[in-house]
Amino acid sequence: MTRTRSTTGVATLLVAALIAGGCASGDGASGPGDTADQETVAERDDHHYERVSYPTRGESDPAQNWGDLYLPAGRHAVDSVPLVVLIHGGSWASQLGAEVMNPFAEDLVDRGMAVYNIEYRRVGSGGGWPTTFSDVADALDHVIRLDEQYPEITTDDELVVGHSAGAQLAMWSGTRHSLDDDEVGSDPAFRPTRVVSLAGPLDMVYAATHGDDRIVSALGGSPSEVPDRYTSVDPIQNIDPRIPVVAVHGTADTMVSPENSIRYIDAVTQRSGIGALVLADGEDHVSLVSADSAHYQQILDIISETSDKTVDELARQHSR
Image 1: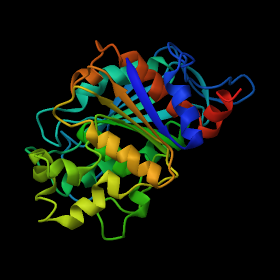
Image 2: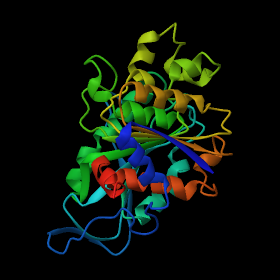
Image 3: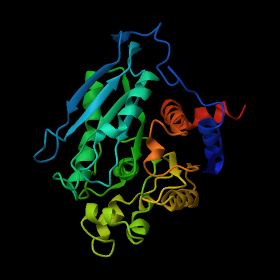
């Protein structure tokens, strides 16, 4: 069972679009439109996959500064293939890498979407503050170069999805335009216009002061020791009410409490923003993103709908 809560009238329709039985699923659910009357810029018999390196500010690590790009088969016109950026979690630490998001990438490209699954330096492998955050910013800004190479990708109205620590990074990526010039990740070349968080620590001060030492390690101190860092990257302190957000969380998650997502969506409500809270009964922190999860297909549907349609389109579709 999945319980949902939304904010604002538009968001209520957004939740209906994402969760109700009308969700699209399967091959082509969010694929490109008809290209019969448009110039074809790409045609493939099979999906295309390549590992791309992205440049970084300062010295890079080729073993970690890369992303896996997936492009769907078929005939495609300019700006006809929606892009989804995936950011893996793992407590901002080096024990886990981008491969944990491979099942999502493979299933989403089967649905006709372009997928960019990024890797970055983490605590224990040259990351931490500020490198982890600048790497993610650089990986996202490289989307502009990918669009130049593959013009079928559309990049002006796109989605970033993150799990766990990656969800915090995904939410942060959507508000980088509001950062001061001297803050890490400021002046973005690319930023998403909607975000999906999967089990994200979206209230970092709350989490850090309730025993989450992983956040303290990633930011190099507690909220009282490095308050400016929390102010800069904590999702709940950087809400942009114009950006639709969906926060999905397992009710049995003991690693990152569902209270993070609940508090975040409540804050979105207070800002008159557009947000949806999806609580997946019985899922823990890891099982939520397992391909064997009872909610896995539902999460794919949420990603597909959020990526392929504007909020206005979702509202019109489900108000009939």
